[in-house]
Length: 340
Image (cartoon, rainbow, N blue to C red; front, side, top):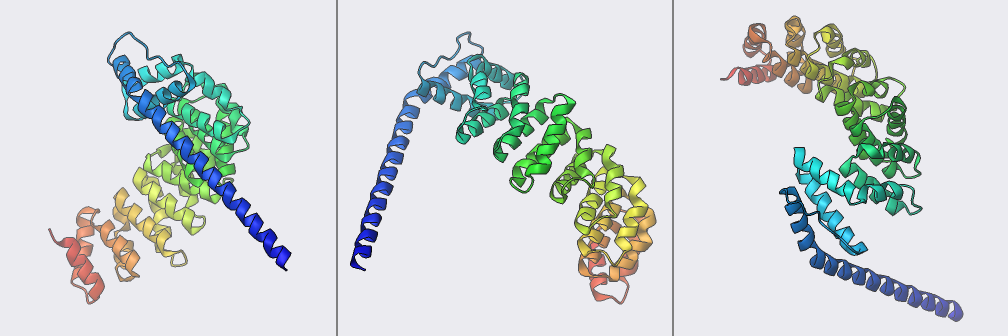
């Protein structure tokens, strides 16, 4: 027993020593980076500012550390710029060789290097990197894959690249949902038609929910038919589709939305989303249905009152009738809605 305790103490001592060495090394590294930043950053900031101001001199960086600081400053500035100034700075980053280095870095063995390279290309989004980005969609790291997929979605490309982007979104939705959401949003903005495979029933439900929300918030009416089909599916998908149709203002979905809103077998969130959509669309034929829901559970009642407020004179008449009714909750809510 004594020998075991001594061995345990020895092992613990070694572990503490190793931990202390690691902490010291980290602190040394941090102090070194801080000194390099303090030394090179002012010159890098001045050089980039002068370049953006139109001076002919191109910022220079000799050593590896100086180049790293210049790149960091350039990427920070890139995030704050728009229009021609952003394009000019992106061209400078490419001209100084950083884009080529990042494309090569996507093939590095170290995951951290590949992630950093993907982040640099995502910030610059150069069309010249399309081939390297497409190849990186097969990377073993989901963060690298999704970063490259988002950049490709933004710059556009061949149909094969779009298909690969969609495959990444489906594959990585559970591993990195936030990154996949960024990919889907980029597709919705740059290539709206590419959302169709992510809305369809073959896609995982998690990515479908994101694609449905993106289609609605971007008012992509070309996907209204797909969203109408989603109203018959599980409640979570149906709720998102109903909200999207309301934002699009799809009048063809009124009957289907009324069916969903009036179906007491469906979950309250899905029915409430359908009610809200009817109000957003301005569906006057839905007034009798909405009036009948003023005696329903609170979420439906509240949604119905808000929807009736948006349906002009017929909706106002229904609210006045509810305000005079003997149903206390409905009466109070309707009176509040009628107040100027």
